[in-house]
Image 1 (tube, rainbow, N blue to C red):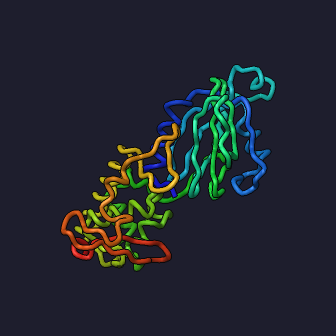
Image 2 (tube, helix red, strand yellow):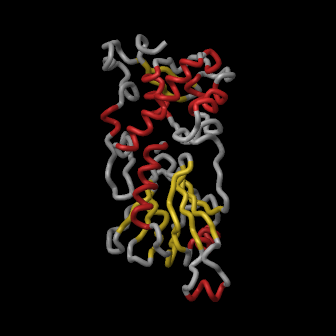
Image 3 (tube, rainbow, N blue to C red):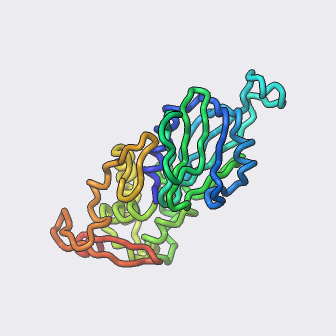
Length: 280
């Protein structure tokens, strides 16, 4: 599943290309699974709106939409330029949000096509249909933003938790957007085993983890995320942070730091990778 760096990469790419564009029409496929809101609600909310911004919230892409102002339909419907709505896209396991030319072949498993006034199209493609499309006002997924949270707040999130620290990092009600890949990589850099109870971590342990989470996420964003499965950005390009993974997906391979074999354990149904020597 695309995690914070992948979704951030996609959101930034979309924002740079479609911010300020107008939505002229919306086509939605017949499969019901991708639609968290009804097809009618999505179409009515998106049609004739201007895309004011595209941003990430947790693992969601948020299109901020405003009324069309001086355009004719806005006048007829009474819309004003300050009227806001949001189109929410969750990519699920295999979803992608692509900017395409209108004459480009429509890929199999395309569930939404949004035509823009600029002549381009936004297309949502998802082979496994775990992604979700919805509309909202004042959307909020909860949890703290890991790139913005202050250290003291970070400590309060974890220091009394009796769950394994890996499970706590994946709890989206605590930190939003951190997933399996970046939890493993952050714990390795912090020297903390994934099974350690969060409550057992010292202030210094948590300081190292806080720094590692931010470091790993920023590096991954700079490299366009990790393409370990189907992930591509809004232009269809793969990320390259998978080339920098130190433990994730490297079971049985030698630790790049100490040469000990990387181990894999299952915690709360999720695979966790770690170095038994470097992480305590």
